[in-house]
Image (cartoon, rainbow, N blue to C red; front, side, top):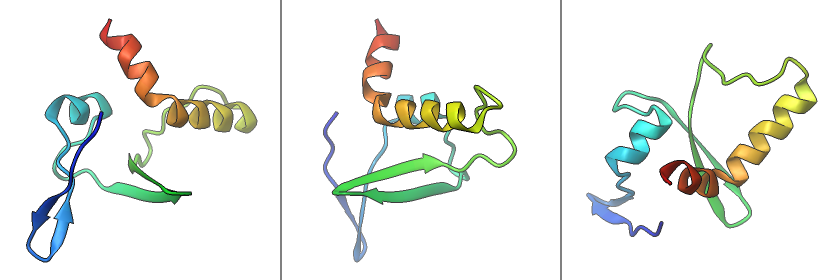
Length: 81
C-alpha cells in the first residue's frame, strides 16, 4: 500500500484507513510508538498488559515479533484471501 502525507497546519499527517486501524486494534485514543529503522518509519500501538504472547521463551517471542513486524503486509494479504 502506498500513501501520501497530507498537510495538517504546519505539520504533515498520515491518514490510516479504517480497515487497517480495525485490524491493528487502533482507536482514536490508542497511544502509538514510532520507531525509525534505517529509512523506514514503524508505527505500532502501545499495548500495556495486553502484549501478544506466543511463547514464554523470550527468544521465541522476540523472533515472532520480528517476523510479524517484517512480514505484516504479506500476512495481511494472505488473510484477505
